[in-house]
Length: 143
Image (cartoon, rainbow, N blue to C red; front, side, top):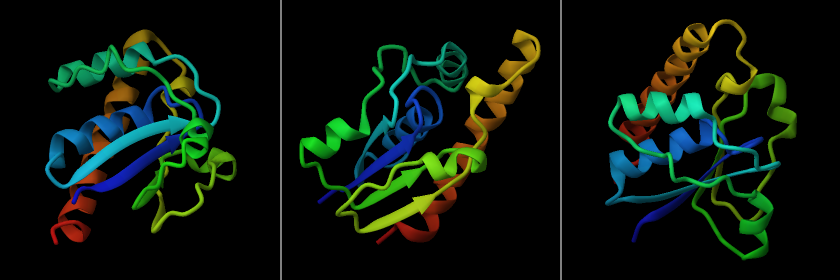
């Protein structure tokens, strides 16, 4: 049976969307990943662009509310918050979870600079998320 994973950040517009897409690509035979946010926002267009660069299209994704999932009674084996450290106290706690993890990544919506600089910083976050997921999958999830 597939393990269920929920990735959570504030707006479900960037980090949690990338993590969901990568895990579903990396291990769809072992995991079913979803993502949600505390205050669902609008999908970050820079995130859509950098994910397309690695062959993953998330352009049709919608942002979702963690509270809707909770009200639906969804249960998860892992809930992984991906908020940055400055927002980690706002990351929600999802009840009834086997394992809770926190992976802090910078928020692409907070990046400043030119469009090119923001794109570079967003690529860096994308690559950090992918690397973290690959390591986690290798070390904890090969049973």
